[in-house]
Length: 558
Image (tube, rainbow, N blue to C red):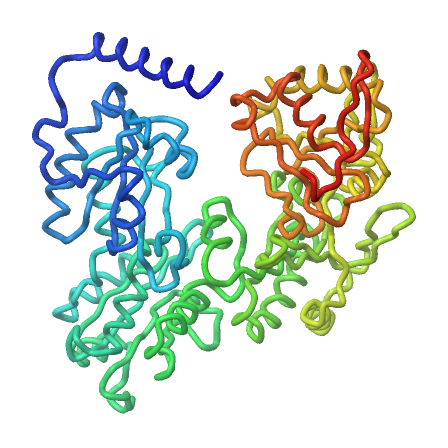
């Protein structure tokens, strides 16, 4: 569909919906919501500490139903200095914002938070999705206050004791802590650090409160009368981690409470246990935060290895918790085992996982890789003790470990039956793109959740059969979430949705692939559009049945 056709269809839909909907204007009383558009959105959010932006259309029934709640929330939050705004995607000039902010339905809500560590470009703000929360007045008001309201001031011992009793937890499904600040008043530089560290972070798992009365902290057992405090100020973290010799109450060093990033990182490390025991409820908490290096240990709870790993990891974690999270996972979490391609019968196993800024997620497995067989021997993981575990971490720091790349079985690679599409798995990716041929790959997700991938499968098969006579071209597919590509991010292989198509030009495996952009082909991705793409970008020349020649251009000629 061409851009003009899309605009016409949009207008027709608007007209149909406007006839069907009530003539009442649900936005009639909205005087507190800021109106944004493509011209002023960036400048507005760049100069606003915290704001929520709704992307809507006036003809959308869900938007109309949400309008009065959003209007009420805007009026209520204005008293707190928190801004709510909206962008009408009924206006054609605002249409590019839909792709920019991942708008796939209406209303879509995004939150912009100017935190101390927000990226400087393009908004100077961290963008947060508001997709899973209820679209209600109460939900909007509560969430925005959670993000933007200052820490509660504690006026008496009873309130602090009640707060800690309610919010300090350490169970298999809930881990939470409370940071308590002691400052003479809010104007103190260290108080400003504390308040800024809390901004934009919704509880749980970590909550912030403060007081100016030292005796309240002493009464709660967080300080003793003999404790010397720089300037009479302190930050104390209260947890329930009784297995940590340093805990469960931690007091931040003086230098830490004077620096926002240092305080956030210090709290991030100590508001979690020394050793995490994995559960579905704790999954998000484990994998988020400043610390993005992990040691994952998989062990069967019914075997002696689980207790052995628990003891070894606890000992080593105490020495390394500042730079790595230690996570113990038992055999019952089958989806996690499946994701990492770990056979339950091959436990225990160890993985170091990190998020490298240039190349993305990396994994390092404990054991030896047999390159000839393409298999890992992890039997040595049965002999792990604190010394062996420490050496594994030292080897990781020294970059001596081999990367572990997940892959589907090699037996699945190639073509099957009457299919003309070449199936690529992790272990065959490099040889495929280094074959001396042009390779076009459709990266897809599992059909159980990716309906678009399922629908596109027959079309991709049609494309493969159409180009089967072109021997210089390989039409392939790869399940991107089940197979790893080494340094994918650095190499420019970053699907943002599925399916997504890339061209790996012959002889250019060391260069970024060329991504198929449907917008350049009237938002089509079928045979006609992909054919035009291949004709334009193929490195090797080829002809069609009429004798016409295509491809063969150098990269600098594209």
